Length: 136
Image (cartoon, rainbow, N blue to C red; front, side, top):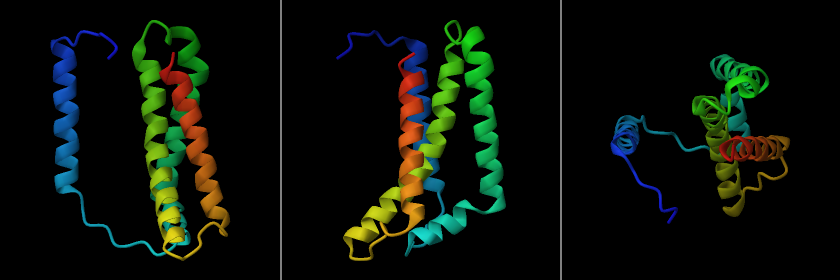
């Protein structure tokens, strides 16, 4: 569609991405059913996840404020790193938002909880940042 040629490294990268995704899905633990957005919030406020969240935010701010202006246009890893780190947060937030919407459609309204709207804000913020740096 874009009339781009895929070279050997591109093919290798695609194969590695697909292989990694399959391995992760095969070895992923079974999830227990989630009954409310507050249950997701309880998991998202555990110390391990908060440490991960803080690390990602620090790395993204460092990449945006320090590395992007200096070497972002000559090194694609800067913008890719920003998009990837923000992507990890958006995936988790979309999972929470999707679960909240699914439960709402099943009759258990989750839109009354502030946590649902917070996850929606995080999804929108992450997507905007990702699209901005993905286009660069």
